[in-house]
Length: 255
Image (cartoon, rainbow, N blue to C red; front, side):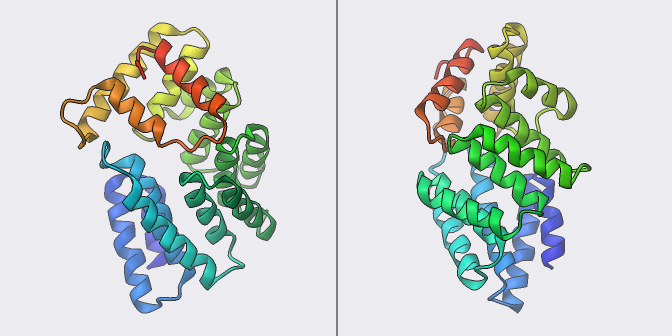
């Protein structure tokens, strides 16, 4: 059940996440102390705040993520996956020191797990260490050169945070936008290198996708959609958030 859940989880779509959640819960019905199933549910709860229910408060989903992630670490404190997920849940709550501690534990416990290295990489970038994030991403890609596309999608985000928009655009040329909110990062990178027509087209693409997912205030528009996404990004450094906002304004989104 856990293997099947993990496969659905990796697909990244809202429908596959529903199937993954059901399978994780069935695994826990058999073994309530199965840490990996709890960490899977924690990650789903966090990710779904970016995949569905756009415009709604995130507090409930993040509380669920924290509950499952803490359980996973309590049940198996030597599982690096549990620590990396708990690190992300603390990061989402802006509990930066706790986040860094669990992310570092995850890296120490299992430095040869490519998925964990890539998850740490993106988190490190949001914690204000994009250079460390790129190092962790490089390790992940060496360990798993035939990686799933989410590695590359996350690496593009790290490049944007690191002030390397050209490198981010190279990634998007290969894999496109994996998630609905990925278009914002692509638009920002295009704006930062002066490809304004492309940036504005991407911003319009984002607005069209966001409108389909939006379940918040019906009077909301493209700037509200973008503002909701950016507000949910767990930047430790205000300068990183402002850099992204500035690029998105150039792309035509008034945040």
